[in-house]
Length: 164
Length: 164
Image (tube, rainbow over all chains, first blue to last red; front, side, top):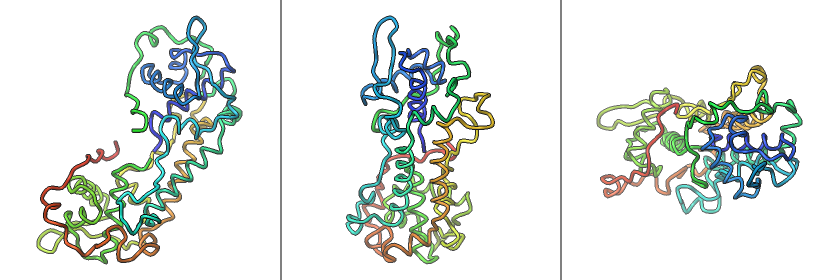
């Protein structure tokens, strides 16, 4: 119900938020978040396109958040990569259900709405504040990624196309 | 967040529940629920395996529910085809999060738990009672499916393997 792409995007944003504005490279983030580097690069591009993250080129460059973690909700991140597919019209295109969903689709959409609301009420700053400040995801965030992991990142899957 | 397979399984169960115990063939159900016949056949087999539906062979045979719709929750149907993937352990396998999920995964699991609870509190009988009894899914449930649709069912996709 929460796709791999959403999970990875959330890990990336939480990680960036924990770095206090210091730019992070894809390699550093891939190590800390345990996301395959190729997959993460695509997720990061989607987050840049959505305006949640900016990319700084050159030596010492990397990704940074464009907003304070207090101003980014979990829903902002989810919506940037895979918006929650609320049911706005009868999936069966039944004329009798044009203006009002049937109870089945009402129930499903109510569940989606609950998730949307819960995610909108959680900020990234809250996730950091509740956790261990030093290690929101990685046991040793300041450690350099081991060279073997840098040069041969495992790829376990591909991100879905945006909006798919 | 609610897969096509889950949506189709729910349509099938709601449809069977609306038929008052009369056996329904895959063709009749495919027409009423607007699910491709090949896809529906696989979903129905999964529901039979899960014990929610039984299959009666021969003339006048078809699928029937094994329990009263009051005794089948939306969650029973969801769990039969694609259980909600609750987060029981740290997806990053971090030793510090062995006994307690980090705030990020706690939030995601809380959302999944909310959906699970909401679905467990809705019975199939409730869905029928709240809707139009004559037409929970199809505008004309007693109509025979048109021959053209019977002989050339459109297949728009395949169900996921169970548990995938």
